[in-house]
Picture 1: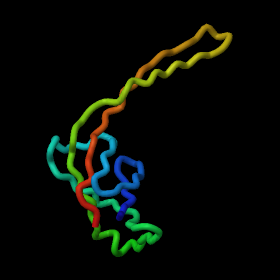
Picture 2: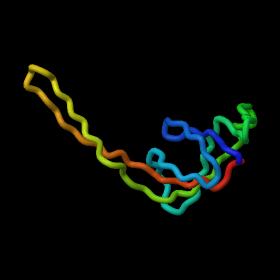
Picture 3: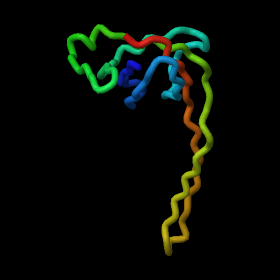
Picture 4: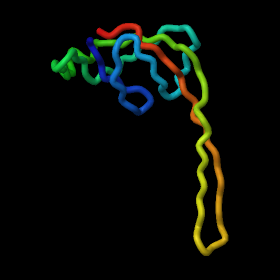
Length: 103
């Protein structure tokens, strides 16, 4: 089964057709098609193509499934013997996409 290594949101993902993954929030409406042009490698089995000239023209297509926010993570900073502590929470926004085609 062919796969591609793409970069989006500062992270790299290995994807195949039909895969669903959560990426950093993208400004695309739900149900719309999305073209991911930052393809780093394409392969099938043990073959891997990293030719930058050919990869510059390749585009991985995906469909936006939903937008959401992850579970809250709690940050707690504690300084011993100082009587100081800080609490903070964070929920990261994400976009869930499904890969529809790989070149």
